[in-house]
Length: 253
Ligand SMILES: O=P(O)(O)OC[C@H]1O[C@H](OP(=O)(O)OP(=O)(O)O)[C@H](O)[C@@H]1O
Ligand SMILES: NC(=O)CC[C@H](N)C(=O)O
Image (cartoon, rainbow, N blue to C red; front, top):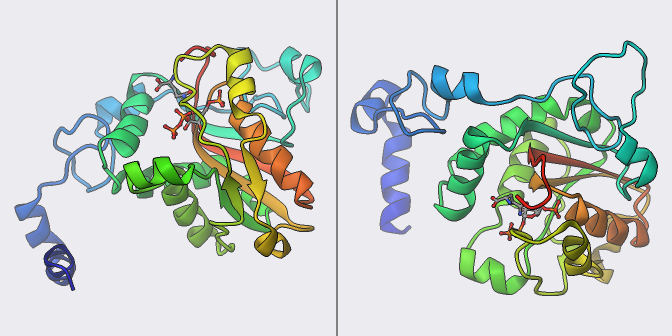
């Protein structure tokens, strides 16, 4: 057991009140004081722009007005249908959502995965109900080595566990070391991700005939979701839905 594991085990053994005295609970969004560990403070909670129905049935983008007719498709979903069946996200990628995503991904705040995944499980309940297994968008092994963790896998694992679904972490592989999508145009994002994923032959049996719930932290243009869904469908998946924590409104974000 490492020193860190020993500390973690000791803390787990202590009553919650004692742990809170040593580590007072802080807001997952701004770091300010909160009542509950892993929760958002009232200010961050109210600024999070949660996505609610009515949404585009394919992309999960919110509509400004409820037209009272369903199922609804956005003009983009008609002009440019995605490879995945349906995408859903918890919140628009505004200041609070961005902070959560960046803290998890770039500041090693792995503890945030649990609270973010819980919100994803709620927003994605329809997708989860139709899924046979949960697959994270993989990182290329080089980036995984540098980052030391895959933020999407952390989210996917919690979602899978809470739903009682198999967590299939290694069947989808990123075979090309793509540059980050950040700062790329819509067309460049699709180009960057084209052919980046493949289903590992040895694990094809875990994908074949299955309804896959693909999990990522953010969807911007859907290029990553499309490329991953295409690989999964080629690998024999029956269908692919995409669940992300945040949805970016503009493609250059
Ligand atoms: O919908 P899209 O336009 O494809 O954009 C979303 C993708 O971009 C980000 O990844 P990034 O390329 O920054 O890689 P990283 O997660 O490894 O940092 C994000 O994590 C998604 O995977
Ligand atoms: N790659 C992405 O789409 C992430 C969202 C955003 N552009 C950022 O800089 O954080």
